[in-house]
Length: 171
Image 1 (tube, rainbow, N blue to C red):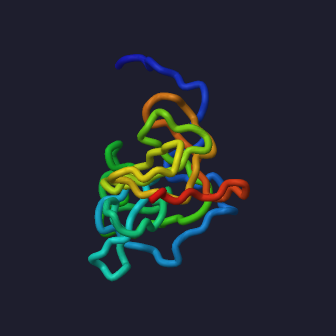
Image 2: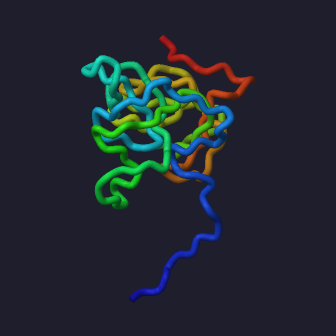
């Protein structure tokens, strides 16, 4: 057996999809069923095929919110590949307002950036302005803190800042 080759000296403050504060967190009034596998910490969209009862990881439809990390029982084997996935058919807790830790797909995330949701998989990316970006839906979240400068940094996003007007996509 090989010896440990890496020792972390600090703990991560959170994992993707985790609320930074429960005081400011607002959830959807309805618990939606996953129409596709949902990644915790990504955004999800209304599924147009289920009369408003399901959410999907992809689509140009209405943005429902962020798939939140909760300690819930998911049947089946938990592996590294599916530990942060809510399987199709399971129920997901979706948040619409608050402060959340997410993983940004771009390494250039900066405090104050606008947050966009990929219409392909719900993943998060950021950009400095509110210009329309093909394949993405503008959210009402902004970047509040960035941990790391490499690809896929852990980012704190919020739509609870009183001094920041939530962005809307430029026409």
